[in-house]
Length: 156
Length: 156
Image (cartoon, rainbow over the protein chains, first blue to last red):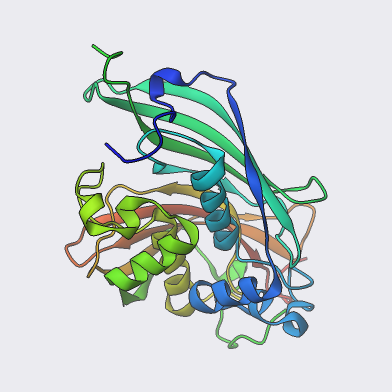
C-alpha cells in the first residue's frame, strides 16, 4: 500500500491507551502572516497593530494553521501508521491561540479501534492529538478518525 | 471591535435556518502539491504516480487544504459576521476527496445560536458549512462553533 518504512503500525498493532509524541515546530510571525494571507485573511492573523483591538488581543495564528502544523508533525514524527495518515474526519477545539514564537509539539493517544465490517483490510482508529506549546498550554485538541490498514496476515 | 463593513451581522441578526453561499475557488495540482509539501507531505498529496496505488487512487488534496480553502471562502464571501470569523472549534468530515481541477464553493447554514451567560457582549453561533465541488459532491462538512459579538444596542 505504500513505500513507508516496514516498522509502521497496522490497525492490529494499535491498542487503546497507546501514546505517541511528535518532534517540535517553532512558528514565527512570518509563517503566521503567510498562512493567513493565503487562507484566513483577517486582521488578527495578519497585522499586529490591528490585532490588539480584536478578540485575540494580539497576533494569533489561524486555527487552521495550527491544524496544518499538527498534521505535519503527526505525519513526520508523531503517528507511524502504515499507509500514512488518512483522516475521515474529526472534532477540533482551539482552547488557546497559537502566538508568534510558540514551539509546538503533539501528544497523541489511541482512544478507539474499530475494524471495518464491510472492508476486512482496514479499520478506523480514533486518535486524540493535543497540540501543546512551550508553556504546556494546549492550543488544539483534535479527535481524529483515521483509516488504518489491517496487517495482511492477521485479518480473516 | 473591527474595521469591517457596517452591514456585517451581529449574533442578534442571526436566525436558525439562515443560509449563506460563498464564491468559488478552483484548485489545481500545483496548489495541492504546494500545500502538501508544507503541511501534509504524503505521496497521495504530492505525487500522481505514487498516489495511484494508495487509498485515494490518484492525487487528492490534503483534507486540511480543503479546510483552509473553505475558511478563505467563508472569510471573504461566505459568512459576513461582525468581528470576522473566530472559531472555538468544530466537527469536520471529508466524505469525498478534493481533486486537481475541482471548483469548490461553500454553502452554510446557521443551526444554533447561544448567547454567552458570562459575557453579555457575545455568543456562539453554530454553523454547518458544506464544501461542494462542480459535480455537486460534498467534499467537506464542517460544523463550526463561532464566537460572534452581540449588537451594542441590543443586549442587556
